[in-house]
Amino acid sequence: MEEEKSNKLDSIQSAPDKKKENQQLSEEPISIETEKSSKKIWIIVLISILVLIVIIGGILIFYNQSSKPKLQSESTLQLKKLCGPKGMGKEYSVLNCNISCEQDSDCKYTCGCGAINKDETCNDGGVIYDCVDTEVLCVNNKCVMGEEITNSIDYLKETEYKPLNDVSRCKSNLENLSTNDKDTCYTINATEKNYARPSLCDKISDITRKNLCYMEIANRIKDSNICDKITDDKIKNGCVIYSEEIYIEDDIVKDIQLSQLDNDISQQINSIENLFIQEGSLSDDILEQQINLLLDKITEKENLINNEEITNTAEYTISNFDNCSNIESYEDKNWYNDLKKSLSERNILLENISDSCFSDEGQILILKKQGSYCNFGNIYRYDINKKILEMAVIMDKETGCLASPNEFGKRENDIIKLIGIWADAGCDSEMYFDYNYISNIVELKKEFGYCLQDKENGTWIEY
Image (cartoon, rainbow, N blue to C red; front, side):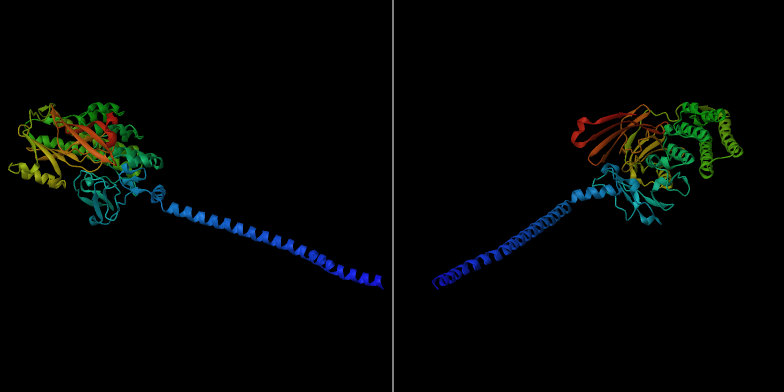
């Protein structure tokens, strides 16, 4: 009995221990599962935090980039071509300006960009240019400055290329042009308006067009040495006669007749050039016919010269100019109204004449018409006795961008010195010109370019 009780007591005492052991065994897998679950939660939390950090970092980077307008602006400029002077940066060019129009009122004048559409903006950086207001017109649906339509030529029909005061647009498009159009580009820019650029004649492929280009340049600058470049003997001989500086003494009527013949010769050269532009090439028969018409005009000039008492000396022998002054100071002169009429016929406003010099001895008046940014303007010589206003020929050495002098400078024999200065985005250029009032030719001689903060290290260019 005692043993049986003892066994019962042992069983009673061991029961809690077994229960406790069983409880521990059952709790052990629960603890492991809880630990695993806890680790998963922490991993999810950490990943969420990392994702949140990445999102917040991205937002901050985006905000910082968008808060830098300068960088954004630079990025934008790389994608745009802006209307403005080239000195404002490589993205700027007046060639990017909208110059389309339907009527004159669609155009406006800007110092930095010239004639542009009234709704276009000239981005000149707020630079104030020394220029005068200029008349603008709508010609062939393009805005042009008033005087630019004088001597205009229908250029490369139905294409975007138009003659300029410089050759930049031709140069930028040469690779896309046919040989004929390249010749047209060089020809028109060599003799465009009142410019003379003989080196461009060298680049013309067609022999006849090249020869005629030399002939026209030789006449403009009265230099028969250029005729030596002509390969056709008939045209070369005609060039020498055409380019001679001839003055018929004491006979204004005959002298005017001589000038008219020169104009007829020039028009015939232009007529031949226009045929090349329109047709691309000319048959031998048509070309011979046109050249003969040209030589006939030159023969008329030769006959007039041979039948008259002539001199090859200077037409104007002037020992001094009486004075240089505002053009309105000559209002009391008996020739003033005739001068005003001549200026009006060329659409030249009196207020745009910045300087004028009068010689009673030579009976001439020279006038400086103020230009604009990258535009020389013009010089005119008025012959009081003949009542003829002649525009000077400009030899710009193909720079394409000239400063505009305000006044005539010191006179040295037949040469009058002029200095023009133009500003371009913090850098200036001083250009030095010689004006020969006898031959009525302006020639760029040298240039000094510098930036305002470092003028001592400026650069001289001799032409």
